[in-house]
Amino acid sequence: MAALARGGLARWASGLMAVCTLATGLVAARAAQAGIENRLNYSSIVLDARGNAITSANPDEPRFPASLTKMMTLYMLFEAMRDGRVPAGTRVPMSAEAASRPPSKLGVPAGYSLELEDAILAVVTRSANDVATAIGELLGGSEERFAQMMTNRARSMGMTRTTFRNASGLPDPEQTTTARDMATLGRRLMADFPTQYRYFATTHFRWNNRPIHNHNHMLSSYDGVDGIKTGYTRLSGFNIVTSAQRDGVRLVGVVMGGGSWIERDRHMAELLDDGFTRSGVARRPNSYDALATNRGNMRPAEPPARPVAHAAARTGRAPQRVVAQGSAQGSAQGSAAATRAGRHAAPARHTLARSAPVRPVPAARAVREASTRPAARPRPAVASSPRAQPVRPRTVEMRPAVPAQPARPIRRTAVDTAGREG
Image (tube, rainbow, N blue to C red; front, top):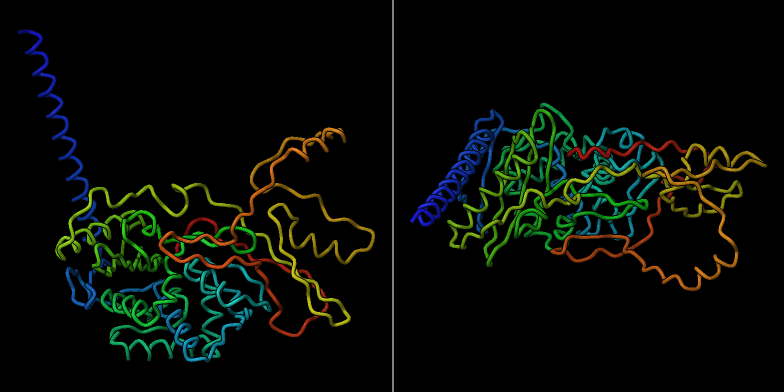
């Protein structure tokens, strides 16, 4: 009897603990939701495939778009590509004005250019302000003129409360939008450019011999997400436009004004779960995993990319491509060494960790190990989300956007690796 009593008491205590844990989780979830909804710059909306609002909060209040602006920049680029105004082989030149933009950025030196697909991927994943500005200058002649073109096109699409002043989303008091307008833009990108929309599902791609990760963690943390874009400035807070599909039901959600990307993403997951439930889709347990991010569970930021150096011969020959390796010496050292006869470049340094001293290996042993060592498997140059079609591997090449000049040192602008959202 005593044993039975003890067993019943243990089961009762276990049940009570489970109930307390569940209650604590619900209270924490409601507190987090109340936290974001009480922010002065908070807005949200969830639209169905027909554009009808399922849920909304302050959807038409003016907000700063931050890097959600780049969705419109890419819309304008996709439209120019479709109409033939930007041929497939076009390269995007980097002006001094574009190269001077603050992070997040790709760090292409002024006077050089990059492939069109690299530019698209840099804007989608890195949210590169310098590349977005360069695209604006390519299409509009100047970023100011391009911003006018963006505003006019947005108004024609029904985004009546949106005004653009630049192509990147960098702070400007006159650049404002609404959650409803951003949701409209997300739906139009999917409907008007279904082929190019796959770029928004890219979790990372390889540029300049290093991976560039997407700031949009919802791609890997929420079941059914296949785009679109994030954004952040101090005034805007953490913004996101998200598209998700389950059981044939497509939803587009917008959250603006989050206090952190985790708070923003968690709230977006709650809104999408509720939207799918209201649309007749059965709720999926554990459909959102905050730890499953595009950066491999938030591993430390990777070292800055090394520059791609080009040397143009004084005879006028075209520059040759040189892809910098992770252990290559800095661009300033390489340029100085190339111009001094009889000098050698500084020894390579490891960027990840200090390596142990290298001991000489006997020749016979080296030959034996080389003959028995398995062949290395080639690694793809571009990695995409499983939901996206793979982007073709290629060697990155930057070319001068102007006629070749005598070789000069290249000062590479440092690439932002702090995980900031542009």
